[in-house]
Image (cartoon, rainbow, N blue to C red; front, top):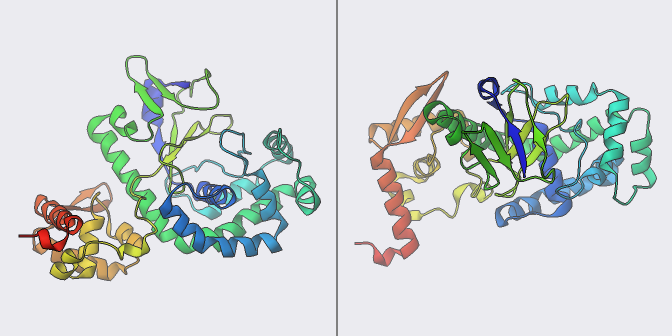
Length: 344
């Protein structure tokens, strides 16, 4: 258990953000060590071939796999830098990786490889190369393009929806509610101003010193898992599993209840089911792989029927189910689970 002691300035300065390179690192872990859930195994079966082809032709990718040590072991921070803002792109993060001083990279790589079987051959040549930083950045970019980028609109929509949810909880209910549900291993002690979290760094204390904490959701994580970056000069970062990933890879909802599809039409039924949490049209478009125009048209029909409502949240317009929409979706799912013969 670690303790992160936060001041009022830390609370005000803390933020949530998306980190594309964290998703690359999490994907690499899943492909190297195996998926932890059935839904991710479905995705892995599709992603493993392009990943293996990339490994065969690019020793830098094999070097990154060698650095992907088991959970609880230190992994080099510079290959997964925390984002500087909420809308940082993979190009922005790769530029930060490429700017890493060679001495820092060497130190972090040496720590990463402590206690593991030393790599050999062309992988060792990559890690010993004078341009190791550039080589590893190139491997990260290749992994992004081959494995992550094809699904990024869908991934980003899930991550953005999590950020909207957390920000809403923070604004409406405060710090404790924003942290609630991040992971069973995280607890907020308001009387002490302390965040407690399960970690391999048992017993250690950290003080952000007014710079706040950075919270980064990830799709490719076990429900109970947490990741940390707690070394300067990086901002203190907690990486947690995003909400709403359970049905992420289930072929766009092919197995959803059929009665609601017949009643509303398949696309509108998918939209209504997807609005278990408020979302923007862009998020829904990415998640359901529908065009923005089609999403807007179907939402207009659902809204006119009183099944969804919309409201502005900052610069975004969020759609949410109305109580009638909730009741319809829940009833359809209930009778689907019991079987059509049980319906009145």
